[in-house]
Image (cartoon, rainbow, N blue to C red; front, side):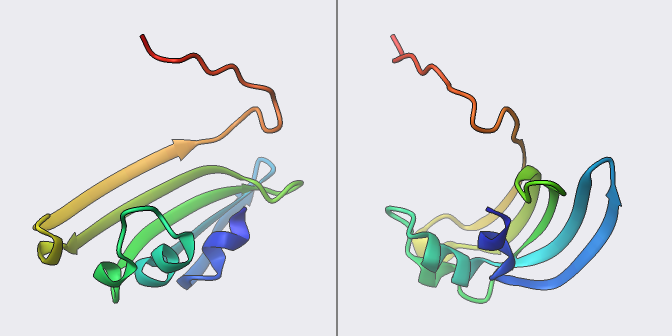
Length: 105
């Protein structure tokens, strides 16, 4: 849900609205977001004060995120990871469609 992201944002901007979508950019407060997300094995305190640069494309009719892009760079030497740089882009489609998952060999 797009509201999960927007609760932890800074510098939210509407970049465009066309083709049935809103294109937004913002900085995601990684410390606050990881604390609420409760990802197993991740200590939210290591992300305190860090931000990820985000862009999301939100469908106007359903407010579902159809695409998300994240760029993150941070010093994670406290956990032995050193300086980390990560870029990720994900597209979502076929909402509410059944899926078949097969076990790996």
